[in-house]
Amino acid sequence: MNLPEHHVTSNMSFTQLPGVRLACGFSMTASLALILVEALPGARVAIFHAFNNLGPLAPGFWSGMTAMADTYLALGLLLPFMLWRPRLGALLLLSALIATAITHSIKPILDVPRPPAVLAADAMHLIGHRLDHGSFPSGHAVTAFTLAGLLIVGLRLSVGWSALVLLAAAVLGVSRMAVGVHWPT
Image (cartoon, rainbow, N blue to C red; front, side, top):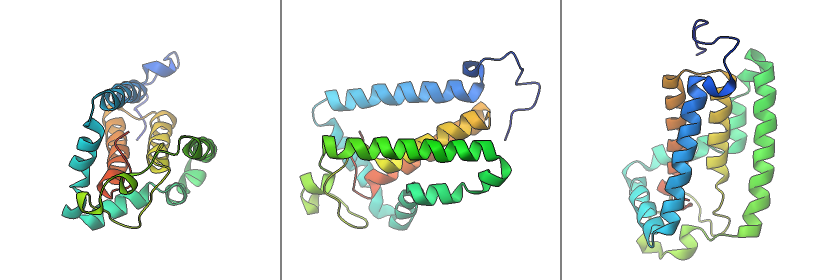
């Protein structure tokens, strides 16, 4: 998964790595999209419904995807990095702990209600147990994108591999809407 030696030179800056540029562009685009979603009346609910309607089409798939972004499971799946790349494994662990601490500090302060607390039961699809509070930020999405960013940077992934890792993180984030527990923001 590393770039061939001729693509990475010692005088390349961090931002010149192809995967890092893609990840930065993805982050900026996603941030702008989220700002637009919040600025347009009704957009948040409409986008939620669009993704939530995917849930009943493949409930096992979406339930599995949302489980993959659980912090504990994601860290468990990344344990082989501790043997393969100990420094990257330690960085993944530290970053996950920091991201989790920040996420769980913000959730009770903002106390954003989740879709089941706002929408009628017959107006949405719920896969799994009902959650009413702590919708923002999504711990699962934070986990998915924290790990994706670290893999892109730590493994110096090419643009193609970086796009694949970001797509996987996005699917994990979308899974939270498909199972009915998070808004798109």
